[in-house]
Length: 341
Image (tube, rainbow, N blue to C red):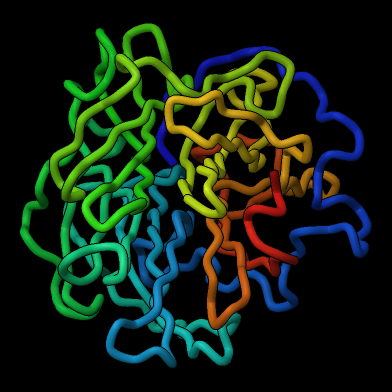
């Protein structure tokens, strides 16, 4: 994750809205699988020594019996997490909770953080990886691979968003989540920083080809932080889905206690038009591990073999992000993402 801290007061979560409470019943939409973490922070390899984050799952385009999990590892240096190395592993579609522990790096070099991964049914030419090119921006780039195993090209990637896509005073853009709505129409949401704002909410953009993007709505936020909620401080990352005629923004949010401590949870917003209005789910936070003394971030959902699963990074809370050790967890989803609104 990538942010500069900004202290605000934290207000407790409303009773009964978190779906990850102390007990799990028929009403629970999300529950962790038995064998978590599916990938633990570890050294070796050195680039995975501090954190595992930003999970994306796609079916192997050449072999439907195999799933490809992309993620990012961060290394440990002086007690802090640094860098950002995208990598991949695989699992059998028939056993989608057992992930190969032999990892292959996708992009090496300077810090890079995954924002979206699109599969061949969402693109004209193979798998696409959108990512932030350095720690915190300032640009978002795109690389492609025909099957997820061939090298990602071009190197360096194609810049698809930069500070000109943000509002006046924007200093960096981050967390572009993309989905294809029509054969020649993609939409996305992203976040930004400026001299006065840090990850304050989401802007939206669209594209005829997934490469050239135009910011819409006058570069005004469509979803913003709201005091006294579980989305009061930061919008770190999000997953944008289009299902049942609705857009869903599944957001990773931070509610600050002070400059170094707070809680990460997952909140969902929905709209029938990208310009809004966007409605927060009455079930927010839809994923909260706080009753277990844990927190979750970068929660993304994927349909594997006809069943939905969630993936998120998890660590003890409250958060002092830079020194925490995040592992990658997997969750059963009872229903579909539409059931979260």
